[in-house]
Image 1: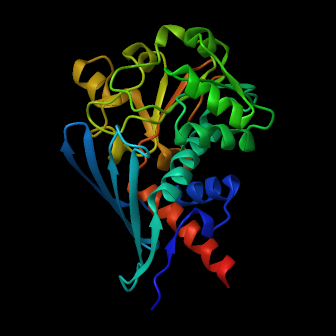
Image 2 (image 1 turned 90 degrees about the vertical axis):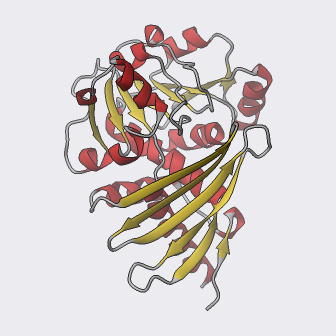
Length: 301
């Protein structure tokens, strides 16, 4: 059997279809998930696996070498649920781009105010570029600004994407209805003191126990949700650090996408600040991988 190795050039995808697939996936059974991290200084090998009954098995391994360009490289194996047979090898950058952004889009679709008009993206890497392209699909007419520690990178992304680069971060935060943070920071870049009523905060970048992008005040002022309790609460510094210090309690984390997609209460008031932690677990890789494989088969027929 010929096992396809699928890259971005092999498939045509769209954000609405991907977000709908993630919503449908979260209306089903919860997955079995496992993560493994190996470290050498700042370099990381991250391997994530998920098994969802009826959907199959996915194993994705990536290296994260912050000093390299690209900093993240790897691949995902997709296995048949009934036979265990390998069905595809999918480039990790393709899976991660669509998984990461669609995960945040689903969170915002449920939690952000539907009348959101302005968005701030903090960061200027590949994920930030995906956010700039994707968010207006679900929020038509959204005005987007980009901030990055290295101003030239923000300006380069803004020029490519037709949006605006900004230099004053607190002022940009105050203007935004949606704030998406996509960095590799180990210290908070978003301060709760800058937030105002009615905003939606989308935290993406932190994925290890020593990483976080928002300070304690940002969490304390917000109604907090995660994409998956199983892959965030005990694994990512964004939540582990403030939980350990007592800045927030476990009960402050109101639920995850499985809860929300199955009817749990999300935003309860237009003036609330909602905060969504995108942890990017392997169950999301599996859901997205199924969409990618289906698109590849259809386009190759």
